[in-house]
Image (cartoon, rainbow, N blue to C red; front, side, top):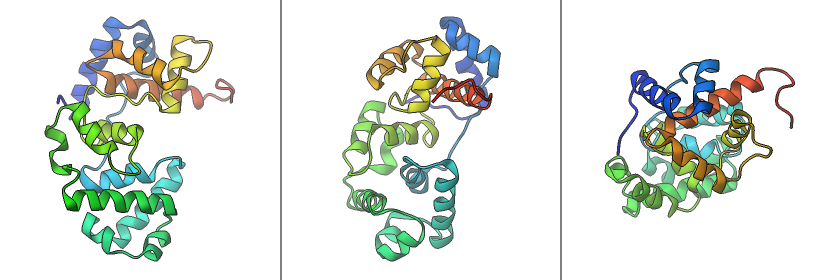
Length: 214
């Protein structure tokens, strides 16, 4: 799979996207190139991605910091050895604990070929991840985008991406995940850069009071 490793790769993606899509050109003119947003690789990175589901950035960060303080290093074996009380003390809910334990068990047992994900075709790696209880398409896509650096992947179910696309493209309604997935195909093979640009644009507008309605 092709990967994004640095800011130069991001700029290459932007340069391509602005030549094929007027909406991406508008975003680039408004916001410039988006940040790399590289996240920690490996098990801690996937744990952070799962932890962040349906939480504010501040809440997810607080949990991540507690996990890092409790587990040094954070490994599948260490997580499986921890008691539920230990994990709840880090701020994890029951469903998140079950998801993280299922992930750790899948890695330890070999059911999830975790260390080989970066070498697998994108769709195969995603399919392997979503077989694990608690890992849905969004989690797999975001992990692959920001922890593995996959260049051509998107997260169409992400609400901020849907809202960003609606605003950037002047759509009457926020596109569904299926609709946005179809739209994103036009941005291949740089869909992960397009996603960063849409997130950046949505954040830009959100900071402008009154622009985005609820």
